[in-house]
Image 1 (cartoon, helix red, strand yellow):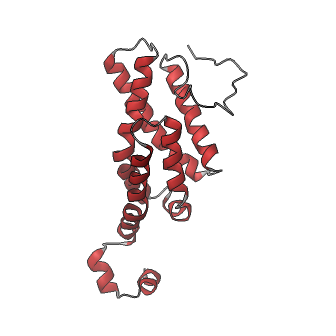
Image 2 (cartoon, one colour):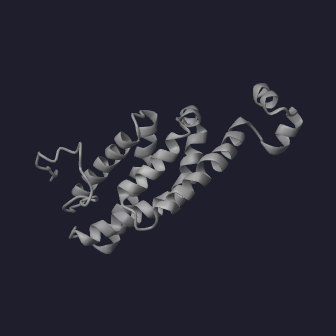
Image 3 (spheres, one colour):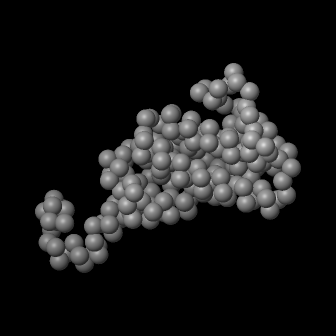
Length: 181
């Protein structure tokens, strides 16, 4: 705490008038410096962007803050940040998943499509944090998440890929896809 106060050049009293503790200060930084640019990046790719483009924008933005994010992984701040991130991201991912299921004869009712898309959308967000924890680059992270998403959609009965019009490098396109019964 004293390092933060001296680095900012203020007193403990002024610091505590704005923040209850270190975690609330970190959350304020995450909201201002990470979440706001993230929302802007999501808006920039647009509503009709593919899952790959959306995930690339999100992971690229988060990757710029790896030093800070690595310090909050597996902490109470991570769960707060995940909730903040879920607000703008989850509806976009869930909508894309629901649209894909509707377009690809998943033989599901609308309620089932809604349930699967919400579940898989939450999984995408959890997978993003896992990829940040084991970060090997933006492209690797996006590919890993898309692979998880593709497997989840296959298990839900959808045929094809949620990113059919995009390259599928690294997915094993030479191998037949197997769906567990």
